[in-house]
Length: 219
Image (cartoon, rainbow, N blue to C red; front, side):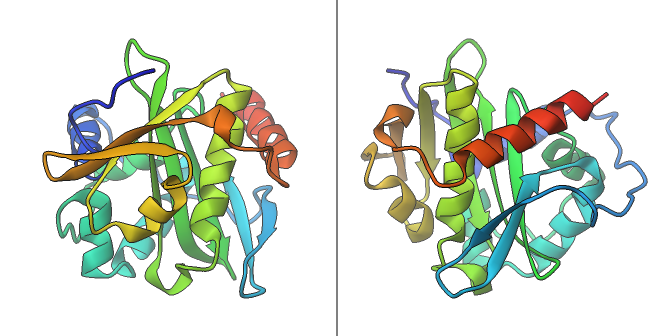
């Protein structure tokens, strides 16, 4: 079973961003309204549209960050980040959907959440992170994004998610608690999740089919 890397999901994302090429720039964005989605009904009756993140989603990330509370920003990034550089936006949105898989969620056309995993070098463990805009928390969206990632990872032959979150990140801890072996180290809650511990979800087949179509269409 893969061990958790010393970096965290909250803090590890900073390392990921720092490793992105300095030459990256955000491309001119186009409308992404017509992209295919998987519709998931939430506990409050609203419908979230889940789909793979694309480079044209950069404005949605800017908008989403502006609507995250300070506490949610700290829980996700390990600091009260209030903006994303062009380089960071490119890293977070222009992903290969293979070693770096990211799914976004829209509710009534607005950014509502994002989940991603990055397969760690020389391992078969993927570091996972989920973020949900405050107004959409506790409605099942975080779990829906997480299960979409589980579906894609298992389809690709991955067996383990690893995670490290701040102790204050209760939303993610709730998602992970049923299948994680966690311990607090260096001020973070860390652990591994065996993907085989999760039963197949209602939307798994649709999610996998969608990401495969996305991969086939990607240049």
